[in-house]
Length: 149
Image (tube, rainbow, N blue to C red; front, side):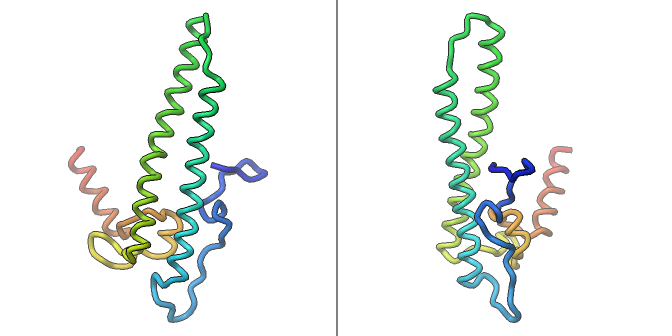
């Protein structure tokens, strides 16, 4: 993820060049203005992830070497393996972002898949791909822990 001068990762809002959304009084939830706000966040996030994938491909092509020393070769293979696992997680995240962008286009964004209530602007700014409200997400995590228990 891109960083600031202090080498801190940029948040999604900063990545998209946006400020936190300021709702006006009596503003309808998930109106066109809010939908556009989240569309911009998601597209910036997706584009940044795609750039990381491109950088990894370039890096692996440029750095690929057949080291005669087995330790050097093993270290490079481990580095590549870690990078590929990270990119695989990001590839799955890109799919989730695409799914969320589709939900925006279908006017089905911002409401809990489980109970149907508003997820909330601040929660969505922190996690734009959220599809559960905080209460339903908490319950899902508790159930998951009980099953693993």
